[in-house]
Structure formats: structure tokens, C-alpha cells
Image 1 (cartoon, one colour):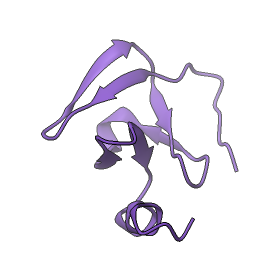
Image 2 (cartoon, rainbow, N blue to C red):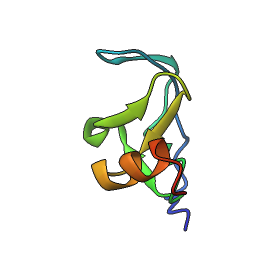
Image 3 (tube, one colour):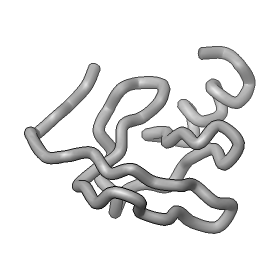
Image 4 (cartoon, rainbow, N blue to C red):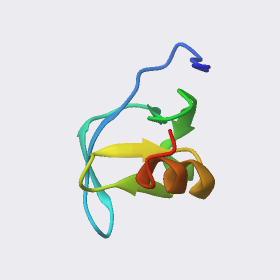
Length: 67
């Protein structure tokens, strides 16, 4: 479920130790749940897939191919 507060999503490039902001915004969207993740709360992403995840559980499921 997409939780959109009307603010724009950021566009990021995910690296192994952090991310680079390509387009400023308030949040990114979880690739699994569709949940908006505030940038200051973003902790989980895939460098290979260039995707963000709302939690460690969702990231693990995605990387194991369970979702």
C-alpha cells in the first residue's frame, strides 16, 4: 500500500556504503511493500537491483526471491 503524503519521492543511486541523491525528495518507495520510506529512515537497499526496502525482513525476502 502506497502511503503518499503529497510530497515528492526522491530519486537515488544506491551504493555499497550509502546513496547519492539524483532528484531531491522527502522519501523513496519500498520495492516490496510500496510504503513511503523517509530518507532519514532509509537503512536497507540493494545496490544490484537499485531498490529500497522498508525493513530488513522485506530486504531479505526480496533478495531470497520470496517476493
